[in-house]
Image 1 (cartoon, rainbow, N blue to C red):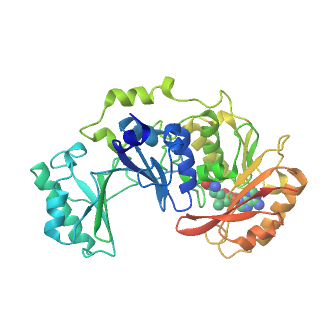
Image 2 (cartoon, rainbow, N blue to C red; image 1 turned 90 degrees about the vertical axis):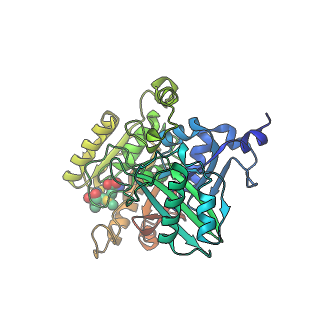
Image 3 (cartoon, rainbow, N blue to C red; image 1 turned 180 degrees about the horizontal axis):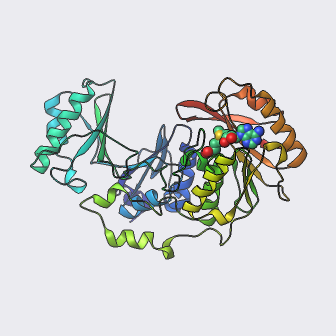
Length: 395
Ligand SMILES: C[S@@+](CC[C@H](N)C(=O)[O-])C[C@H]1O[C@@H](n2cnc3c(N)ncnc32)[C@H](O)[C@@H]1O
């Protein structure tokens, strides 16, 4: 079968990401599925399409399972339920939605959380759309499914179904991930203003770290950036220790999952990670970071120390600094942080000449205090706040 025909027979999936992370999720998918990346990217049937809020890709169950297991920057992976359809009235919505193959993913009477968004559509009342979809689901499965609230942080959340109405076109998707993917299972202890694991992985991908050179995080807090770096360098899949919603689907292929999850099918990175140094001036944060790294199984790869940024001792480089210093609205609210950023810039010039630096911060003025030439074009959302990633080289 030629690639175009093969692609059209595959299921459609959507890896949801935080705004700004789409190019990095696309990069991860292209590394995971090189065949998809080699196909043309400009048509609607392209097998790998970055879109606002995520990346659409095509595949079968193996690709769906591998995406959940391996993607470091995605928040969840949705599976499209049938093809999108037009609906301008509730009767039409119910009749057409009842033709979707719900039984592939849901069992009768299973509690379902429905998340509906309506945009420029005749049907604009999202609760009424959710109730109609629940009726369609009952028509299809022969029994009603109780509607429950979504709880994406829970350990075993109810099955989430996402429906999007845009210009009367209805797209229904079933969530395959369950608990949101940034929950890797290792981070129980949280310091002040912790980063989501998915964003920490995004910072590392944005930094261009080669996974061979030293990596330094002098404001490590609960250790998210160094832990994600060690997992990446060692090729440990972020989802190795967790369960996924697709494991409860009627079409779950246990044998396929066991094969994909087996250590022999996991492409490993290196046997040992390069030097990864993590420090913070707060002893409590370092203690939490150590405990998190233990749970992630990478404590041996990270050198933790309790120290202020002024007394960091980088290994021979050049290497990469990837970090998330405090920024006004989350840590040290109201305090003037300009001196800290100016000091950070001075320390880097003195101790890390030639190193690559990547800094996440909400405030371009603070980044400017570092007096480094930083490219700040990459904007993301962290905890509801618009943040920038500054990237450059210490000169
Ligand atoms: C935004 S938090 C980092 C969060 C971290 N990325 C995480 O995921 O938990 C900033 C950290 O910088 C630390 N910090 C503040 N001033 C510092 C200084 N002068 N030297 C070293 N660490 C400092 C704080 O203790 C805090 O843990």
